[in-house]
Length: 216
Image (cartoon, rainbow, N blue to C red; front, side):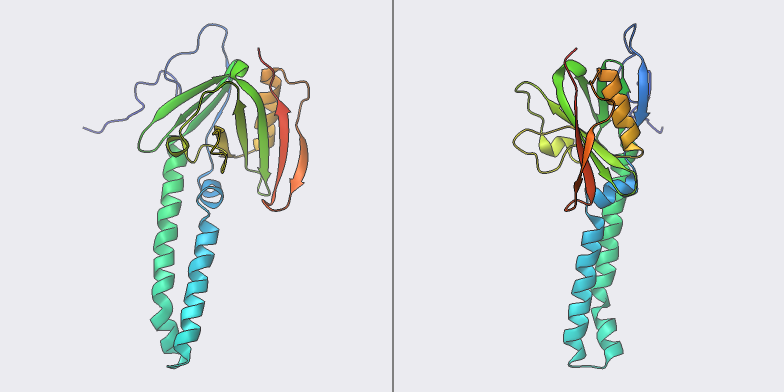
């Protein structure tokens, strides 16, 4: 008999019905392709294998005809296609299993393709949220939580802000229309400004902003 791991959810992405007075304002999930590019760096991996192929073809070309050198080096292209295919499949599996929810009281994240867990962040636990926008319109909203609670980097990956290992920042990763969602979150949390002020980050080819999320 087929089994749905989420069939016990009263509402998709939620472990139980919201209490009286709490309203769901938005639900979404990562873009699979954006997650493959941003979290799994599939374009960099593809470029690496293309460079390996080119280098091997040039070296082999000194000892055999060009066409034979290309055929002999094609192993790296095949390996690259298989590796990138695996990374893309992983990204889409993570995106399909994830549900991000924003209510008028908290942020809820149901994440995990193999080991599913649900995390809840009442607005009073969130000191600020950082918005990272990509050129394709997708973006990441990272939550800076208060207190001393630590979250496992490995268990939460890729639904977090990368390279923040001292204190993991849970994140709504690679979501479409991230700017609108960031505004909705700021309004729901009662932030003083409707939108974060964005600043260019050329290294990441993105824009980054911070929106204060005051305690309830």
